[in-house]
Amino acid sequence: MSACDVTVLTSGHDVADARLHREVAALMRAGLSVEVLGLGDSGDAPPGVQAVRTWPRPGLAGRATLAARMALVSRGRVLLTLDPDSALAAYGVSRRGRRTGLGCGPGSGPGSGRPALVVDVHEDYARLLADRAWTRRAGGSAGTLARGLVGAFTRVAARADLTVVADEHVPPLTARRRLVVPNLPDPAMLPEPAAREPRPRALYVGDVRASRGLFAMLEAIRAAPDWTVDIVGPVAPADADALTTALAADPALAARVQLHGRRPPSASFALARGAWVGLLLLADTPAFAEALPSKLHEYLACGLAVVTTDLPRSAALVRESGAGAVVPAGGSDADVGAAVAEILRGWSADPTSLDAARAGAGEYARVRRAAGGGYDELAAAVTELAQR
Image (cartoon, rainbow, N blue to C red):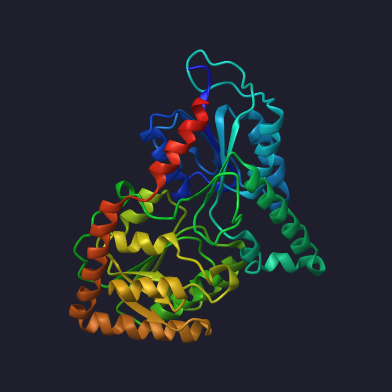
C-alpha cells in the first residue's frame, strides 16, 4: 500500500464525535485504511484506525490555521472533511496536490498527486449561525465574517468529488455528486434495549447549551424530585457560568444531576442501559426548525421513551412511533421545564404508562436495526474515489 486510503480531518470536531465514528466504522468495514486528524484525546478516536493525531481545541480564529496544517500533513488518497474550515483547506490541497504527509501503510512515501475531496455537511450552517451569540459581537462583524465563510464553504462543498449531507434540506442543494447520509445510529455502537432501573433516570447526550435545552432540563428535574439525569457532552463556554451558578444555588438539584463531559459514542450511550427516558428539549430556533437530531434516533434505538419539544420532525416521529411525549416549544426554560416535569412525575407515579412508550421505542429500534443507515453507501462511494 503506497498511501493511506482515507484521511478524515476536522479542526472543529472532537475525535469522539458520533458521526465521525459512524463514518470511520463504515469505511473500515469496506476494507479502507483510515487516519483521523481532529481535536481532543486520541484515545477517544474510533477503534482500529491506522493512524490518529489530535490537537487542542483552537479558538474560532485558530481553526483555519489548524485546518491548513491538517490538510498539509494529511496522507490519504481521499480527504473527508467534517467542518467548513477543514473543507476549505482540503480543497486547496486537492487542487494543488502538494502535501508533506507520509502514507499510512507499510512502504508509504510522501503524499503526492491530487487527493479526492469528500465534504460532509451535517448541519445547515447558515441557520446555525442564527443560534450563536458570538455572531453579534463587534457590532455584528463576527457574524458577517462567519456568513462569508459559510458561503465560501457551501461553494466548495458543491464542487467536491463527493458531497455528503445529513438531510435533504441541508445545503448545497445541488452538487457534482450529492449523497444524503442521515444522522441515523450505528447499532453496533449502541446497547440493546434493556429493562429500566428501579429509580427514574433521564439521559441527555449531545452539546450542552441553553438552545439545546440545558436549563429547561434543570427546571424539569428540579420539579420532578424522584428523578435524576445524566448529561453527557461538552458544556458550551457561554453557558458554563450560568450552569455552575444554578447548581450551586440548589444543592438538592445538584445531587440529582450528573455531568459526564464529552465521551465517545459507545461510552455515552452505555448510560442508556437502565435509563427511563431520553430528553430532547431543543429551542424553537431557525437552526432546529427542520432538524431531526441524531440523538432522537439514538434514544429510540436504545429503547428509551423520549420527551421532545414540539418541533415538527422530532414531534412527528415521537407521535408516530408512540414512543414518548411532546411538550410545547418556544416558551421560557421554566415553562418548558414545568411541562416536562409534569410528564416525568406522571411516569414515575404510573410506570405502566411509560412502559407503553418504551415498547414503541423498542419496536422502532427493531425496525431501524434491520434497515441500516446509509453509511455503507458512503463507504462504497469513497472506495471508488480511493481506487481511481
